[in-house]
Amino acid sequence: RKETNDAYSKALCQSAEERRRGEDRLLQQLEAVQSLADHATQYCVEESQATVAAIEQRLAAGLKEVTHSGEELLAQHTGRLANCKASLEQLEQDLCIEQDARRAMEATLGM
Image (cartoon, rainbow, N blue to C red; front, side):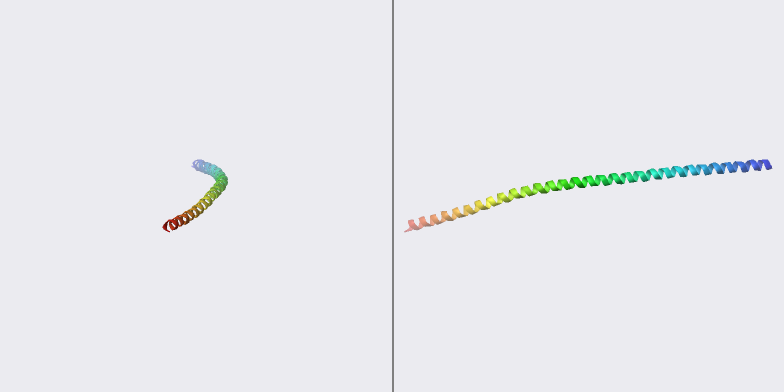
């Protein structure tokens, strides 16, 4: 009976030792997975930051280009408006001259 108890105790100790080694392996694997996850997360963060920075640069360049184009268009339209205003003023002067001439003719004819 003592031999049976000794064998049983030995088997229990071996089983406990194997379980402990298995737990240690699982813990090491878990730590390795966590390390990989941390590295992957850091990589994703860095890539995202780089992508955001590149997008911001492109947006800034696009905005600068649009602003420059807009300024050019504004200058062109401002020039055209100035020309239209000058033409309108000239037409008003011509109309006044024609109206004065018509009144003068009417006054002459009416005499």
